[in-house]
Each structure stands twice: as C-alpha cells, then as structure tokens.
Length: 117
Image 1 (cartoon, rainbow, N blue to C red):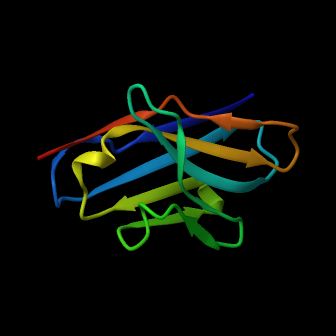
Image 2: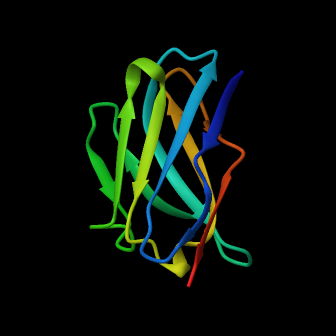
C-alpha cells in the first residue's frame, strides 16, 4: 500500500503565501509524475500543477506565475509553493502520485486552503 499525506494548508489573507507538502510512503518502487489538484465545494476537481520525475513542471493557467511545484525524489515528496493567493484559490488541495510499478494512481487525504478577502 501507498500513503500520501498532505500538509501545510491553512487560512491566509489574499496576497499571502502558503507552501504545501505531500510525502509518499509505503510500498514505493518509483514515482513517475506527481501533481497537485484542488476541489472547491460544488466544483470538479481540477489540476493545479504536476511535475515529472526529472523535475519538469506544468501548470494550469490559473496557477502560472503564482505557484511553483517542486519535488524531492529522495524523500518521495512534492511541494507546492503558492504566492499571491486569491480567494478563488480556496479549495481542498490533493496530492496525486503516479507510481511506475502500479496500474493506478494514489491520492492523499487533502489539505484545506482558505484565502480570505
């Protein structure tokens, strides 16, 4: 089994910053792509950013220029540095990992990010 645990969420004022972390543990051989998704109440879950094992990032348009995704392969951890936060960034943020030796991806439990106006 594989577990993903997110941390770093919280309440922040508009314009502020947060850094999310997601640590994977368990029966891991190797992790391919890792990503961050978010879901607001009543909305579909959407991709925020993902990053390849080699460190190549990709961002949703809403995140470009404000968020930075990074990873530490030795720690099986992915990060999301969020700055210039907006109220519309408010959501539960979920970590996702695509394992090389698995036929499906894994999800964390989510961490709440609330941006006040």
